[in-house]
Length: 90
Ligand SMILES: [Zn+2]
Image (cartoon, rainbow, N blue to C red; front, side):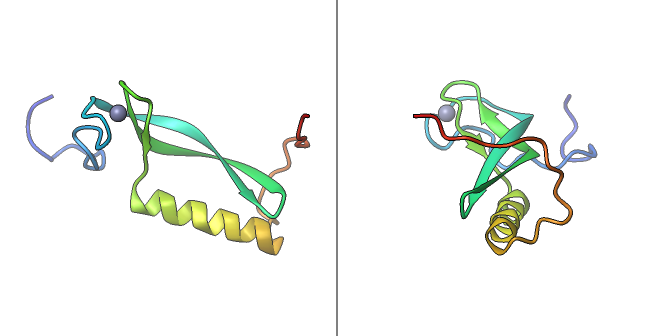
């Protein structure tokens, strides 16, 4: 896996976890987003720390989260797919 930055995958944001210094690996994760009582789940790539489990997101992904939260608040969810109801348990 040597050879610099010529591969097609995006460059890693972090070589090490900024919290604990552990190894980070890129994974697809599900992120739960909330806005005004509505909830959306989005699958994104994140770098996840092996050691402490911290998830690190790229600025693009964070912008996407903000967009989705705003859509939830504004009710602009036409392109979201309903997958079930959410409940809060006591
Ligand atoms: Zn860590």
